[in-house]
Image (cartoon, rainbow, N blue to C red; front, side, top):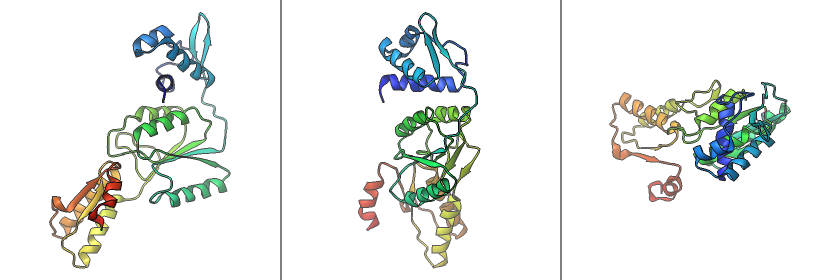
Length: 254
């Protein structure tokens, strides 16, 4: 993302969150350049982008004025679908199901993936704020960690774009609508099954940067206590998005 796109991203979020109200003048090119440490050319490019999006009007000698877009949104029959992956793990089946339901109801899915990277997530969310869409189905990125993109989620809410989270959501941003599995119960059920078959040394492998891994670990620990079994640190392996492939190829899973 270029400097002017990042600046446009910030100004767009400020407009959507109400920092600059409709009819209000935003700071001048010089003021923005000085406060952000950017050149006037970069600022001019960012403002031109916002003008093309219809968010501001610019008149020589009058500055840049925030336009009143109101709350009207024309129906487009486009639904953005954002997942961490597309062709890996459980996602082909999930996306196939989403596409079938949307298509049968006359909607077109616009699919993108973050690859569980918050920088990719930010770029996608910024783009969606400028697109004509009727709603968003989204899976959070690294949901166990503090998320730097909450401001964009708040902007989406402010713009009244319907949004449904799947698989997980952020502890510091609970959405109105979400569809998630009971990961705690799943972790507990796995332990109870093995314990019922006489297994007394039960290891666990969990993902540390997604909240699902923490909830599964919680269920795992709870079921071990119920069964009177010990939870040993050396029987628990944590991995992240970045170490996943190394784990899969290691001898631990041979």
